[in-house]
Image (cartoon, rainbow, N blue to C red; front, side, top):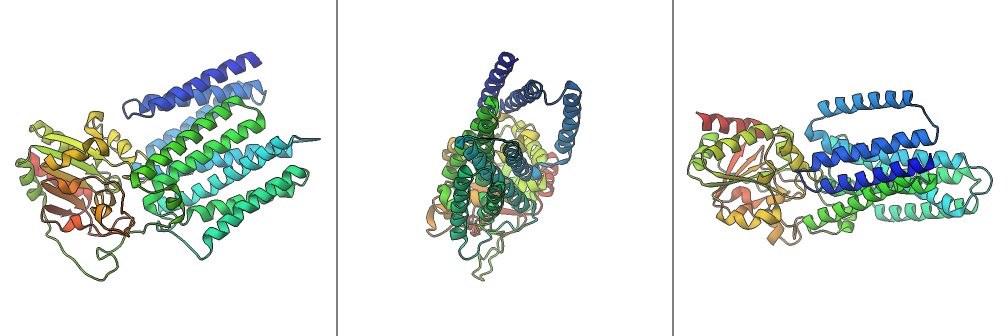
Length: 457
């Protein structure tokens, strides 16, 4: 049985790696998910059988119940709720690691190796921080808490003290593991640290937070794997932890900010008036769907820039219908995807994939930025910060230095937005007031539907 178990674990690890590789491209992401799910399934089943924890009857019951829950969630949860669902799943992963490590600790008898006790403490620390931190991220994304940073005096000092306190408790636990209150103390300190470390992070930085918490959940799982001597858990956790850190770094580069700045600078707002707090009221000319179609009739190339507003309005299907109509008329149509558009990594890609947008039409920022200057019309749907020229010129702005889509270089810019309110960075967008910009105010789905009706008419 040990030989069979190790062989299945090896197969599972290979499937995890192949699945992760395929997740790097939208074209193969679905296959990557399937491979990773298969890897997890065989790993869980062989572990339960090898340890004689449970028989096939309960395994089948678990598969049926779990599949039913997953199917319901897949049908019920809208793509606007996907970021908070991912955050919630990250939290469950961290919580599971905490429970497994704690269970192993309370079952220990006699002498224990220091490295095992230290790993248990580390697993509980990281797992609990992931759990409570993910719940806060969920609450911010769901609107239960305000999305703007929540700060108080001495917050960073408190976080530093909590980290030092957790380390001290871990050291004491290694010296006297019979004192179970020390592990409980690590749990309490970690729970508070998870809350205080995430509340000062604004909504615009949620893609970074989600990927970082995902990395935490992987590290907690790997640590738990060492505790229970499970190789596949170590490998799987290490893959999740490493890929999460890499993705976090990609997100930070996309915003031209360090991870420390994201975690500690308390950047962002809940959005607000267009005056940016100065009290100056500004106005623009309102355009209609008919005006937009006139511009399309005289264009040869169109670039569509999706943002979080597209997800909120669930306008991806009618937007792709618009794109198809324009392509049928001979226009060159492409989508420009900013790395941090939306509320989680890859949010726009997932959203547009649901509308069956061809993958070859989805171009990353670096691949399309130089083409904006040769583009006749750019259609922006619900995006703000990722197209704000203040990122280039306004020193002191939260956006300064962030790579943006060069939308302002196109001949005509159409922006579909509910109002002139600022984005999550709290910075007014001068592009709204540019002579080449056409502001189409209203719900994205309703406005794009009107454009489709005019195009068909």
